[in-house]
Length: 350
Image (cartoon, rainbow, N blue to C red; front, side, top):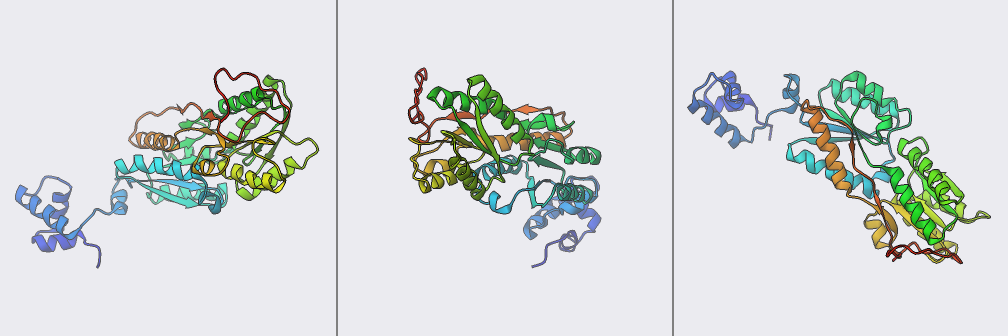
């Protein structure tokens, strides 16, 4: 069946298309009886306004965009991204907004997608995620005048509002906990080195280890996939001075590390403590349950969506700090072999 048009409504109602337009848009120029008849016929035919036509006449597209520069196989299994999108969708749906999601291969590709969306009036605003230390998207979006919200640290956001979580504080809490347990060799399997939040976590790990009076056992940068996480874990564990604890930048890599530990005959947590970022269904279904940092990720997505909608509506939006993800000890952390744990002031690993 073809999509019903205003011409179809006009024929059924026996009026002109102009009269139908006046009636459907609640403009003067038609009688109350005609307006009611036109709206009744429109509802009967299942007519809906064209978002493209509305955008061309100066209206809003009722959509926002997100171009993602990550491997599709990672997005399909990474709980953080899917929970974040669920939060975004919950906020958008309340305002009858849609989310346009597109995979891109490069930063230039993402800029081009945003330029095309904005030029064709297909979106009213965009999210920017996975910011780099020097991110070309920020000045490009600023030059377009395209409403945008950065999901990441404000240091890399330029004049754009940022919704962010204090990752440095999370790293400090993890290291303090592991150091109190007695760990003196703490390594980290991280995301891509060029990402701004990775740099923040790298710097925080160095600072936290210095404060705890322990050497940093190394950082391995990866692409967030389970395969890369497994390779990095294996390299750390066969090194002459292997770490007694490893912190992972996502849950997928931490779960992959369990298999590597089994492969090498290590017991978790007796021989090696593991920490995941963030807590998710993946970290909870494995055994032992993985210690992790935890936060309300859907709420994080909803906060970002509401900020973007406010920006689109012409409101002034500043940086929004979400606090930080708190460490939740579970079954994958304990004192290291031969280590002496200090009192945890009422808290103990479980």
